[in-house]
Image 1 (cartoon, rainbow, N blue to C red):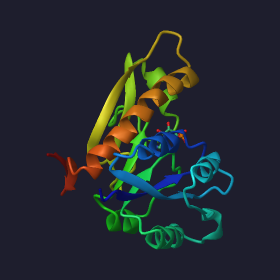
Image 2: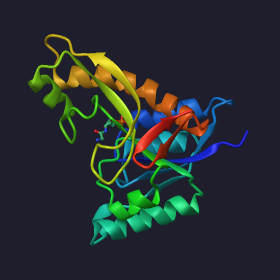
Image 3: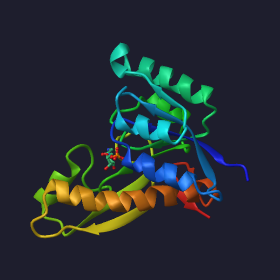
Length: 202
Ligand code: GAR
């Protein structure tokens, strides 16, 4: 089986990365991780990758004068690793439109809300402040506009009375770990693709 060569971009603890590593560890999973890239040199996710024997690269965005210059350096690492597809997994950097256009249809993100609700930062605080009974998570294609782009998979998660941002985040995270590998599987099997600005399901 030819596996989809996937790079995972992280900035932090990498629990979604771990879910993808575990899924890719199954012999019949149609994707493999060829690179874990971080903009933060001591991100714990890099340690997870090293433990799994996956190549890593870390480049600090602080070493570059512009977003475009950082994105070009990152793109060079992705090309060197022969990545065909990108999963953003807690990658806390805005991407330049140039980078996103280059990878259009080959880059996805996971976000801890039911988009289009609650974009940006402090997502669980936003959900609690809004008083919603249901939140969740979304895997979507990345387009230049932040936390937008066609949805591939979503899972609903109940908001319980007395929830704090932390308790809600933990419940949503469990769902994230289910839908991210499931979405990557669908993509690698050609069961979903981006056409114009719509996700097309086979
Ligand atoms: C996850 O909840 C992910 O959805 C979120 O950051 C967390 C990373 O956790 N991403 C965003 O908010 C992106 N807008 P992880 O490092 O344990 O996977």
